[in-house]
Length: 78
Image 1 (cartoon, rainbow, N blue to C red):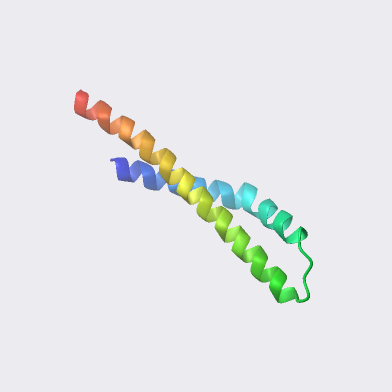
Image 2: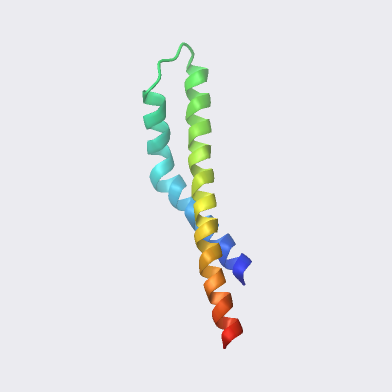
């Protein structure tokens, strides 16, 4: 059950980051640099967007893992 809860929380964390934070973070990072090529802008924007999504995925997994651990402990005790 712990893995299921962790996977659901990871999906929710990644979705939350993708819809609410990743675009803003990527725009902020790209705005801090000066570029010679529009391809460089797109590459950095994409990489930052995906890194922020990965961070949300990992954070969601960790939260779900700890919640799942608490649920598992309660099931074993009862």
